[in-house]
Length: 416
Image (tube, rainbow, N blue to C red; front, side, top):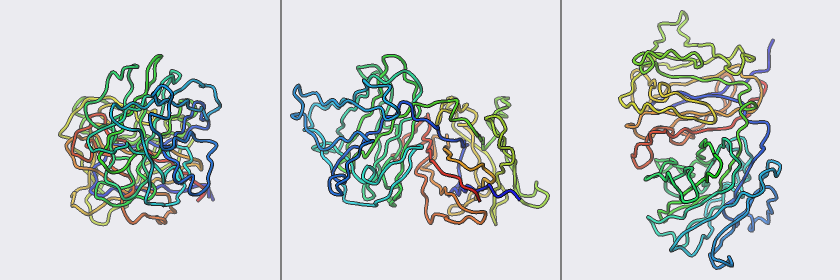
């Protein structure tokens, strides 16, 4: 008997989802920068972090020339030693820290362990006047592809959004509107999410490029941390599963995907025993050949596809190329009755640490949330409320995000 397996579960409420991929997290963090914004929690609990750059409360007067600049440490081995973080603001005094909530919860974001003192603390602009912002400029990153994660752990704030992009030293290519999606500890309905809602992005850094982040104030909340890590393609794609939920766009454009498992419209009646089960392919080389996806629902007919918006934009999510036909299409429950759900169960994954990304590309929907967890074959450990954060193509203010708002999680899959 093979006892090596565990099961990953997804439940999407008011289902509208395009596709998601599963892959092992990198086994090396060559080129890794971890920034802890805030030190109140560290100091209160007498925790001295040796493997994070800690930025406590500061003012521009703390710097001899008035330029707020920090040298960042490469915690992946020190190979990139000249990376700097610069914060600029014409009006602010600097930044100050606070956090009235204390979850004391260690988490893992994008394969990196985040201690509670990092997640529970944060910095915000001083004064935190709504509608203002501080620009964060990260310079001298070695050329390459990077994964960038931002988060704010406080669970009593409103939705937190910002702007993040790659440009030159003057901030070229700056977005005109927020594009991060909500990265606070509270979802769009105001419900606390103790494990946080980190947002992860993938950027290609070329020679001379800078990574920019605009911290946008709304007089509530701040930023707790940022993780920047080099992506090592050869190591990340050991065990890779890619699912394209929906085929309307593929069919309309005559695109036949060879490197995605495509799920067109389906009903439970199409399966001999009524069990909607598919075999998934390992696009990293086929080493894990018995992984299955099972979709269950006591009342639905099945799932049906649609997408009235067509951005025709190829994107990269967590180092994986996602063609526009995957991002622009999706499946939803049939009938799509509000308050109902369909459950997805992924079985027989080899033990290991996995990165899981979900997204929905349509840019005219409301915020999309679901539940995701690891459990046994019966779905143990099921969360009682949504825990994914928004993964739609629309931010919390109803603004379209053409590149999408993918949400990435890291899970350890154990035997059984």
